[in-house]
Length: 96
Image (cartoon, rainbow, N blue to C red):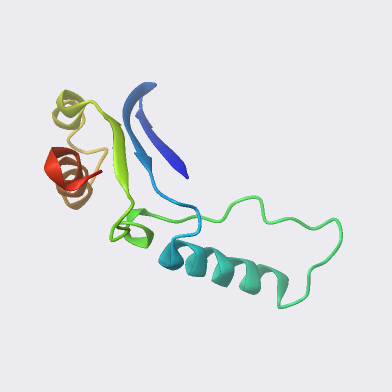
């Protein structure tokens, strides 16, 4: 899974982790189960299954592919402080 984050058209980060990561996959499965009510319906598709970094932040295979550290400070109200700390920590030594 590759997740990119943009603010005002500026690429801020790219995060990579396996799509099969259990917490992330379980979250998506619960969204699908809720949407379909346990039975897939032909022609009906879940177009938007939102998630956030809390669904993958503990993944041991997560890596920060790209981070524009300066942009984190340029947009103080666009990214949460908690997310900024997460991405910086993973980028500096704790990512693959």
